Amino acid sequence: MTFENTRAFAQQLDASDELRKYRDEFIFPQVNGKQVIYFTGNSLGLQPKRTKAYVDEIMNDWATLAVEGHFYADKPWWDYQERFAGPLSGIVGAKPSEVTVMNTLTVNLHLLMVSFYRPSAKKYKIICEEKAFPSDQYMLQSQVHFHGFEAKDAIVEVKRREGEHNIRLEDILAKIDEVGDELALVLMGGVNYYTGQVFDMKTITEAGHKYGAYVGFDLAHAAGNIKLELHDWGVDFAAWCSYKYMNSGPGNVSGIFVHEAHHNDTDLSRFAGWWGHNKERRFLMEPKFDPVRGAEGWQVSNLPVISLAPYLASVEMFAEVGMDKLIKKRDLITAYLEFILHEIDKEIDGTEFEIITPSNKEERACQLSVFLHGQGRALFDYLMKNGVITDWREPNVIRLAPAPFYCSFEDMYEFGQILKKGILKE
Ligand SMILES: Cc1ncc(COP(=O)(O)O)c(C=O)c1O
Image (cartoon, rainbow, N blue to C red; front, side, top):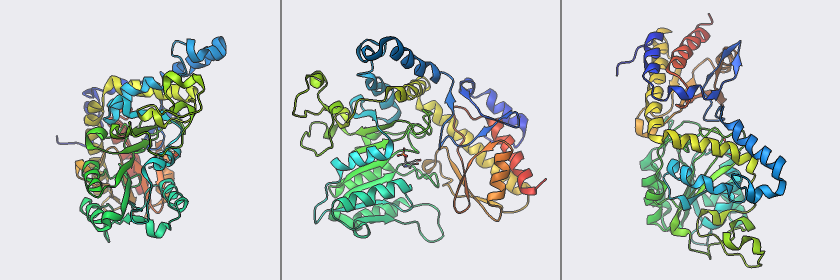
């Protein structure tokens, strides 16, 4: 398709957008009396209008049924999490038994490390990407210390090449071969939070397995954003948060995936709690732990149902639309945003910014990370003041994620106009 940097062309794209009715399903903040252009769905997704009814339902059940709500609410609380298995497994490419919802992301990664990082003197190294999200770095460091290793020996980062912004797959595979039999675990982001680079999880998983290592992914920036086939790829475990592309609300509950290959291994070490215990016998209050044979066997506590309610609203909305349609629009709107950025760069006659996200479609999804040369924070502040909600990452990067559920093509055009004014200081 030949794009044009005009409002009429953007409106034409909106008119033929099969997801356009969903834009009205979200609540947009206002700046200067106008609905914002929201680019931070990769950080905190917008609130869907239908979410409140899901939360109200729990509040009403609590008011009218109190403790009886656990069993007699329309959606009983004791097995509320089971409602996620169908829709969520479709979103991440899993079997329903391989996914569940619980805790928050970093907590879940720690819990999964209990099962999937069991180092020995000879096999103790972890491969991760350079500049992984800080919480993952702290999590990995504390895990290796906990097992009596030094982070500098046990954690092996795959680096970017000099002058490059992204990590090459060939370098990840070479590092896996280099570490070889000492490799205990590969744990990486599925999509890098800073650059938006999508990693080839299938190939990385196969490579890690060649050396008998477990392979897991932090899917914070992948869930609800890219096509995942976690079961078929043979990924051992994964976890993600629900508040970014999945629009479930600030700091909300995480999802996990555990491959069915591990479900019957009841000797696998884990930190247990009563919500991971055999469902039929949970309330018999027996002393011996008998894990559910599925991802739910990693549950610990009874669930924060008030928090799960917005997440349920979200996964049902995803199931209604399906990842394929979201990805189709995602690719078009991201390509249009890329075009607009290049057009504005030409119009202002200078290289003011550089897109550091890979340009190849296989390696990118919704996010474009833009390095601002010479402009920096003042331009970011201008955008924010003028109703473009984006975020700033040191040293000089703004991240733009046109979430396909609620961003419009006209937003992209309008953003280009505001950006141009901000650069030319008109
Ligand atoms: C890639 C990645 N990993 C981990 C986290 C931490 O998530 P939480 O604070 O929910 O544990 C984030 C949060 O933004 C993230 O982007």
